[in-house]
Length: 200
Image (cartoon, rainbow, N blue to C red; front, side):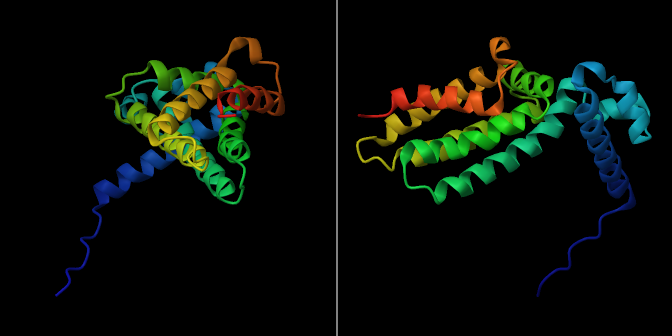
């Protein structure tokens, strides 16, 4: 005998609605103005909640950005993983995974750079940071799977190489010296570095 799912109570629905409004407000304001130009008060006002309530969901603007960007990063990874499955060459498959992630983090350059900084230097125990790091791990697993198509690359080497590719991607995307570069220029820079790593 199956048990019907318990209906969600009004309190839980209200919490979810507030959360959704916060994410929508932060997404819109960060996209329009960039994280540095947006205050938590503006986000709270747009979400139609008090700042005290906002801080129950995210304690800092960095955490709010993680809320917004984690979903975008996860979508970019899925897009890249799907593209990579249809591409036979190892380097091309790796770059198919990398490209949408670079595009995601360059859609609003300041947001992307701040997101990567939050991800790397934030508290790994905080749930939003932990979720971001989990997406990084999934990215590295996808890259390692593409690298293992080359029979000369062992399981261990694939994991190490994927970690290096991830670091190259993050540094190329976030570096101040690359702010003026286009997505295509960054992707080509990453490609040339990854190409050197691959077995000959």
